[in-house]
Length: 579
Image 1: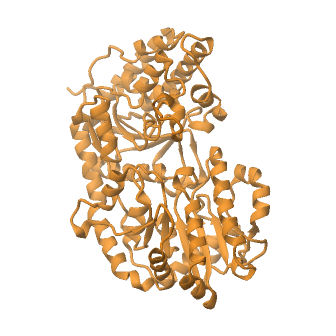
Image 2 (image 1 turned 45 degrees about the vertical axis):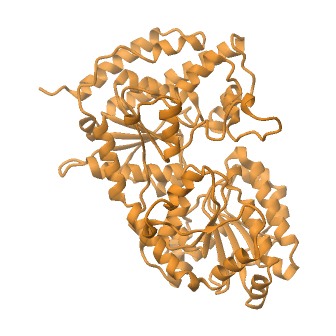
Image 3 (image 1 turned 90 degrees about the horizontal axis):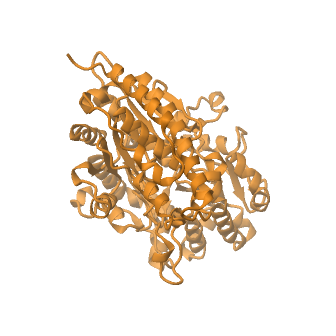
């Protein structure tokens, strides 16, 4: 007779409660002893367990890249595991669900919100993150002991609530995304380990970013070398008891855990440096919806631009600018709400989203330093200094809009200020009449507005937003994958992108080692000055889009062949079989 899965998980839950209630943690060295409980082996296969329910877990949900990828993973698992007579339940777990998440989380999926699991500055206002990674915590100090107790206490609280939900819902497979790779909240990562180890839950641990990508101890830097973007995670590396516990969680090498990464370099690090068993480490690609490949023409482009104009104008029929200087003066207040906005050199300049001469450049990312969005503005400055582009822009009464889709994490306000200053440099260098035809807009993840209904509009989708663009700009310094390259190409929108680091990741995304018909063709965003030939190429692309038709068609075909949902679904099937 097959074991009763629900009864087994409830029994394990009871044992977990008793064990953790009796646990005594006074310092970091006490914690490892509670991470390897002696529990009975799991009596059901991973496939049977997963069919009972799959939970995807991250910090919060919006319209960011992680949320979008989780939606794709969940779609694939639901299709893979459901039978004709029963649909496998999908659970979405996190610390917060922003309104924009309704775009990517299907209504019938179950949501479970846990207080205290947000990451970085959103984890209790950033208090604990700062203490762990921005303040000294010497080994053996009182502050170190206090933090050990605090993190353990939070982890146990998180584990209890998560375990209760997992047990009551009969969830058999957990898919944490970035929780145990990118340390936004170590208490959450520790709680995840406790739940999986005590309840005997299978885990496909999805890693998009690691602390060692752009992070290392200060002692490993050469004199004068610039600090890495994740160096702060090594602030207390010399507190060995703390760092041993911390490093063991990122990622956790559990018997029921598989590690899936977004590129081969990450996998190589886990196996070659961290000693993970190669058979339990692999890559998880992405999938591109068929909607991206649907043909579209000028009417569809104008429909998207009208809808985005309503979002930027808060439903008003006229889209007009806020003066850049005024926006900068009130930036602190704007950061709290992050309402969509159109900026210009001065206030009240109207932008017609349906104008025949409007050029739209799209930066489909959040605003953080490594995206180097200010380089987009440097490109515009160079274009307006390029005779071919400037003359055509002036003569044909063109307008230009750089549109940025993503929000600004509160801790990255300085990065936004860099972008705004670069925009100011562009418009302030132009004659007033020309400067009034250059715009910078931010939709901060918004894809719908209450005014849409009156116009008979449907909410925007991700693929819609790509279609509003004449070209996508993507000058990132580093990327774990580089999804905008794939998505823009699927829509047939040209992309101007840097050869970001790690170079092997970029090469994999565009398919440099693949047959020519599977390679994505991009326009290289230079690292240094913009050459005349490059500016000629961009001018031609923006002023005469038809010259790029062959490349558009090629890229659509290349992406369709490499990034189908069937391929992603097959990867999940193979992962579950690996257990």
